[in-house]
Each structure stands twice: as structure tokens, then as C-alpha cells.
Amino acid sequence: MPHISVVIPVYKAEGCLEELYQRLKASLETITADFEIVLVEDCGGDQSWPTIVELARCDARVKGLQLSRNFGQHYAITAGLDICQGDWVVVMDCDLQDRPEEIPNFYNAAQMGHDVVVGVRAVRVDPFFKKVASKIFYMVFDYLTGTTIDNRMGNFGIYSRKVIDSICSMREQSRSFGLFAVWVGFNRIEIEINRDGRAAGESSYTFQKSFQLAMDSIIAYSNTMLMLSVKLGLLMAVMSLLGVSWLVLRYQTLDQPAVGWTSLIVAIFFTSGLIIGSIGIVGLFFGRIYDQVKCRPLYIVKSTTESLLNRY
Image 1 (cartoon, one colour):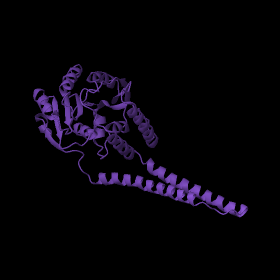
Image 2 (cartoon, helix red, strand yellow):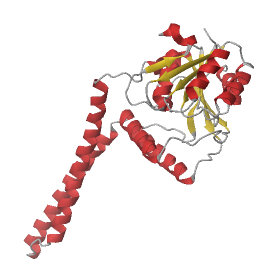
Image 3 (spheres, helix red, strand yellow):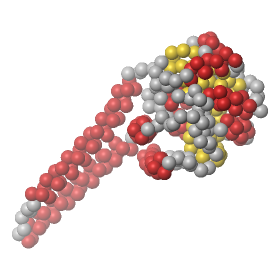
Image 4 (cartoon, one colour):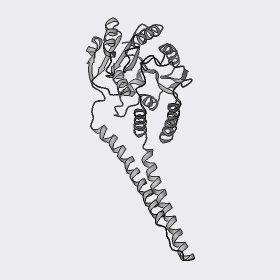
């Protein structure tokens, strides 16, 4: 049983896998020689899988898993967590923005009694729009879920076996590893780290994918949106009652009948929009329930390296 496992989702990373392996090996061997590196290839369509197979052939501590199609980063992380066996598990990205040299620092901090040690970026080097969008998302998420999450936080960190086992027991279709790690609790510490630029390629997270992930996370972790729609409906009912009371009072005291076709149409369109929006919010939650009750597997494995065959 390895002492440390490193789980890495791989997507279009053929240009940096060799360097990633060499730097991981050098960093991990300062802690222990008893480690494993689990590389989960998320069907990126490049030469990442042949590279992983070659690395596993040269070093039995490298384990490779290839999914049958592109399931997404957090599903690939789940696949790696399901088969990793270390007492401690490091989760990181494959593009070398997460520096392998930080792992000994995480491990040392964990030995001081922490079950979770997560890196937060000292300085975000993302484009301005992405930083603003991330900050807005976490503000909304914190409000809807009643939590407080640092928007500089990512997945990069080290987690104890009991934390990983707890996360693996959560089989929701909507996946977000970082939020799972927050939800399960345990002793946690966050330390500042520096991130490098991408070693190869470009981020696969388009605005549409990022927005979809944000919506999935909010819906999966909070039902506050349903309560907000109820509160808004009650507020509109109270405002309508007050408005009607004012019109009746004005007619009785000032003999001024209610007029205004434009105001009537605006009111109709406004309330109709609120009703349709509320129905849409309910529909989103029903859609997530429908996805969950189908009980489809979170991922499907296409191939494994030789060193993993005995686990399937």
C-alpha cells in the first residue's frame, strides 16, 4: 500500500507529462519512495494516453486510467480517487500550474494534525474577466449556501485517507471535488502558494463550461433559490395588495378611477416573467433529480495500464 497517492486528471497534456512525472518523482522521493502517481486520461484525443502507458512501463509506481469519453475534470478526479490506495492523497492539475515542489510543504503541514491542506493562490494571474467572474460566483455561492470559501482556492492539496473515503462515498451526478472537500469537514488548513503559467496548451474551461459548472455547483449544494422564489412571490402578492388598496382608497376619497393601459401591460409582463422564472428554477432542480435517479455510472473506464489490471 503506497504512503502517498497523487491523482491527476489529464486532458490534452502530451507536451508536459514527461516533465510532470520527473518533477513529481523528485518531490515525492524527498518524502518517501513508497508512492503512486495515478494519471486519468479524460479522452482528450491527443497522445497523452500512449505517453502515460510508456511512463507506467518504465516506472510501476505510475498508474494509468483512460476513460471511454470526455466526462470532465471532476469525474476524472473521481475515477482516480476510486482506485488510489495511499494513506495521503494529493490532487492536482496536469498542466504544471500546480507546482509539484509544493507537495512536501503540504505533507509537512498535514503531519501537524491536519486532514486537509489546500493551497490558495497568493496572486491570481488569470485574465481580469475570469477573476471578476470567479469572485462574483463565490459571493453568490457563499450567500446561497451559508459558507465562506476563498475564491483563490483550487483542488491542489493533500487529503487524508478518511477524507478521501468520505468523498468517494458521495456519488452525486453533479461533481465538484473542491466543494466536496469543504463539505465533509475534518481539520483543515489553507496555505498560500504560487502558481506557474501553463506548460502547454490552453485551458479547456470556456465561459460556457465555467458557467455550467457554477450553476451545477449552486443547484447541487443549496435549495435557497427555491426559497427565494417563494419569498419573491409573497413579496409581489403583498405589493399587489397594497397597490389595489391604494387605488380603491384614491377612488373613494378623490373620485379618481384607475387608468393606464401601459402600466397594466408592464405589470402583466413583469409578473409573467417572475412566474416563468420561478418555474424554470423548479425545473432545474427537477432536472438534477432526474439525472440522479437514473443511477448512471459517473465514468466508464476504457483502458488501464498493466499495473492497474488487478484492481478491475
